[in-house]
Amino acid sequence: MTIPWAVSLSTSRLFPTSSAILRRQTSPCSATATMSTAGEQNFTSDPAHLDTIFKQKKALRLVVKRDLKSMDPTLRSEEDEAIQRIVMEAPWFKACKGLCAYISCSALREVDTSRILSHILSSHSEMRKKLFVPRVEDRNRNMRMLNISSTEDLIANSMNILEPASLDADGNEREDVLFANEPVDLLILPGLAFDKAGRRLGRGGGYYDTFLSRYQELAEKRNWKQPLKIALSYSVQIVDEGTIPLTPNDVLVDALVSPSGVIAISPAALEICQ
Image 1 (cartoon, rainbow, N blue to C red):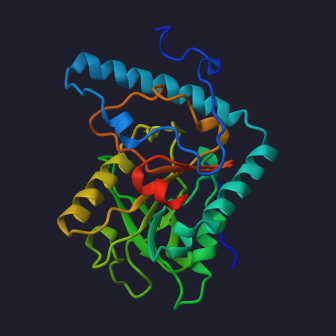
Image 2 (image 1 turned 90 degrees about the vertical axis):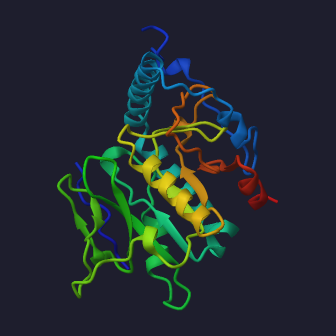
Image 3 (image 1 turned 180 degrees about the vertical axis):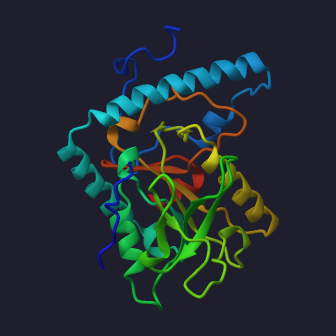
C-alpha cells in the first residue's frame, strides 16, 4: 500500500542557547524517573508565575525548533527508521487492539509515523488494530480522534496537513474515540521536547493536553484501564529533567521512544520492559 504522506505541509534565564540544554541518550528500557517526580510540582494560579512559565516554554520552543531545523537529513531519516522499527517490534504495540496515533507532518519536523500507520492499515482485517487519528475542529483546543481504515479517509486541511474527513464515504459520521464502546490501549504522541520524568512540551496550542485529559476522565468514568501514552522523540528533543516547566494542564507521558530504544517512565511503562 502506498500512502500519500509526502503531502507538502507547508531574560537570560530563558534558555539563551541550545548548549544550555544537555541532551541525554539512554539504552533501551532504561528509566531514571517516575511520573511522580514531575507530578510533585506546587502549581499556582498566580498570573505572574504562569506568565513566566509560558515565556520559558516559548523560549525553549525556539531552541528546539532551531535544533530540529539544523538536524542532518540523513540522521533524521535514520532516526525515523529506528524509532518506527522499535515501535512496531515492541510487545505493547503488537498486543494493542486499538490506538490513537498522530499523522506526522514533515513541515513541523515531527518524528515520522508513516510506516507505523501503513503497517496498521495494510494488516488483514481480522488482525487489524482499530486506528484513530486527529482532526482539529477549531482554534479552541478542540481536537477529535476519528477512526480510519484507509488512506482514502484522509484529506488535507486548510494548513495542508492530512486529517480524516468528518464523514465516511457513505456520508456517516466517523467514530470518535471519546464515544467509542471499547477503550484504546495506546496513544502515540508528538511533541517538541521531552524529558525522562515524562514532561512533554507541545507547540503551544493545548490540543493534545486537552484531549488527553478528556480521555483520562472517560477511562476513569467507564472503569477502563488507562492507555499507555508513548511519545516519539528524536535524540535532539530529549532535554534535562527540570528544563521543561509545568502548568496544571500539562499531561505527562508514560514513556518515550528514541532512536536508542524505549525510555520507560511510569510504573505502567516499566512493566513493558520486563
